[in-house]
Amino acid sequence: MSIEAVRKDSLYEYLSPPQKIMSQHFVDLFDGDILNERWALTILRGTGIGFMQDDINEGFNIRAIGTPTPQFKTKISFSSTRQYSNVGSTMIGEWRTLELTNNPAKMALVNISSDAANTNFISTIFSATFFALQTAAGGAPTTTFGSTTYNDLLFHRHELTITSTMGTLIVAGNLEATSTTTLPTLRLEPTFQQNSQTANVAKNMRVRFAEAFNH
Amino acid sequence: MSAFNSVFDIFKAPAEDWKTRKWHWMSGSQLPTDWNAVNLTGTSQFRMSDNINQGFEIFTNAVDGTQGYIDFNNIRHYDEQNFIEIWEMRTVESTFRRQQWGMFFDFTISADFATVTNDTNSTNYEFVTKDATVSSVADSGIPIDEVFRSHKIVGSASDYQYTQDGVLLITKLTNLPTQRLQPAGSMFNREAANKTGRWNFVEVFAT
Image (cartoon, rainbow over all chains, first blue to last red; front, side, top):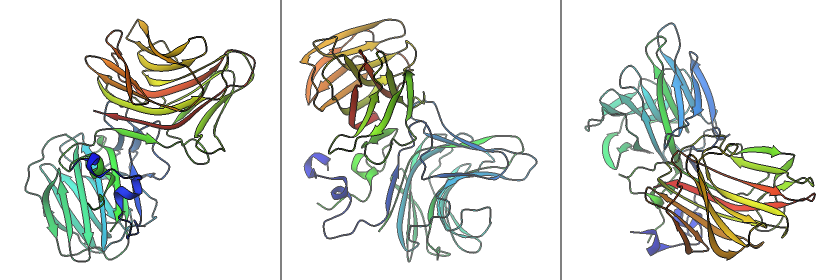
């Protein structure tokens, strides 16, 4: 249905029926001189950087690099301001990776966006060929691979949804994976993170849209 | 019809790409830092106007030739052949000033651009474009004034269209930009008096 058919007075009214409170909601367009102040850029390991990419439709670049091995990590997050529910929230992001190997890149709703291996989160992670849904409840994550081959360097729309009973990953409008185990038990913040598993080799992801909201 | 779940869904289907889009409501305590404010000549103030429906303003010092502008600091996310830009602007003073807004490769050098001017050296609003070397002016036929008007530029491979207040005024075929672009604009004074240019809303998106 086109917007013309349902035109409303406000953005609020597009997003929330009159009888419903909209709840927490944000949108970032990743355009302009620098990264919006809502985000904190953090180099978890290595000497990574983040910068607005000066190219058509390329958004913000997150780069991981370092030496020596093992894994270098750079992320943007809300600095542990966790406003999104672990039992009813959705995150939508459009991003791409610039390298196909040794470069786990992910979009996530996480409780502790740190270097810790085990925390509470739901994420979509690129792994050479497929996107995978990961959910974790403070321990080892459950990984469910999607069925569509995505060994490309193109932007794709990712949608993560977490409820009290299920985690869901939709990529480019297609349901890729669900998880009903190890669902996060703590509130969450949005995060984009690029890793590099090779010393002195830069790995990059680019983000040009992000949105999250509570149900 | 229920509400949309997300802003993404308002504009795009799930299988579509968002590409790049920026909107700015020009409201709040100050201009956000994703904009780059520059004193090109002399000194101007870049500030929110504390008045109803008046948005952001560039307020030049009372020195002839003062010019301030804002842009994305040459972060150019927009293909010159595939974009739409919409904005509202006005001036406060009616004499000896020039306000302009549009899409620029680099505001500080004579490079590719498409801009709308509200200039007291001209009778009407003008639509000016420049390719790598040559610029040319198209007269809109609409007299300059001091009220908010909506402006829209549609950039494509074949032409650039300029629409004011919903009426297509100019389809320009010559001297079209050939390089990536960013939104930008300025206020310039032509006498030793303060001049004020205001913007209520700016939106630009890839098509």
